[in-house]
Image 1 (cartoon, rainbow, N blue to C red):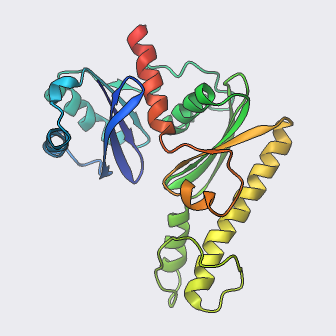
Image 2: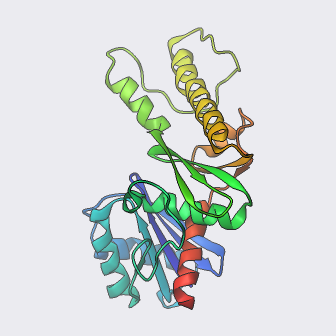
Length: 259
């Protein structure tokens, strides 16, 4: 079985695959100081709870946007699973797609594996929106080439900046607005309206401009934790695919196994 490890700026997600099917997944806060031994204590217990032995893992792939976290995860793979970790974007796990931007090597691994999975699953030109610590918008053409994109502050990051830099505004939870009105009657509602509907307006504007620039119909695929929240209030997305990043990693691991 494949153990995929997706290291984001906020969380690390571990997913156990049988073929292309996720059998179990676990999440832990990203901390580059966490050692391979600490990961092992946590992960071995969770494997056992789900009824799996460490021996079922015969392949490990890591995708990371936090370079300092990589070494300790490689230690986890070598020491506790006796498997050398594959790293997305590093031979023999090259992306295998054209990256048509000014600095191809600067493309984050998460965005690359999203593009690979999206092209494999959805035909035509695509815009992939990934809601993470930052919200990324990525354009993949009908041939599977990565053409570029944009990066915006994530919703929680925007809210933290708003609360952290004002004296009287309270901390609120990100949730669906109680009404579709954009005229709030109290401070909390006004903050939620500004953050939520302001974010929707930003997405609508960027996606419309991207589609116009592409010049062909383009599907919008959303992934990341907050995608479902926005799906309820906008028709922007043609599909919400929560496992896009992990599935891209599984595709890369398959290619490496066949090579």
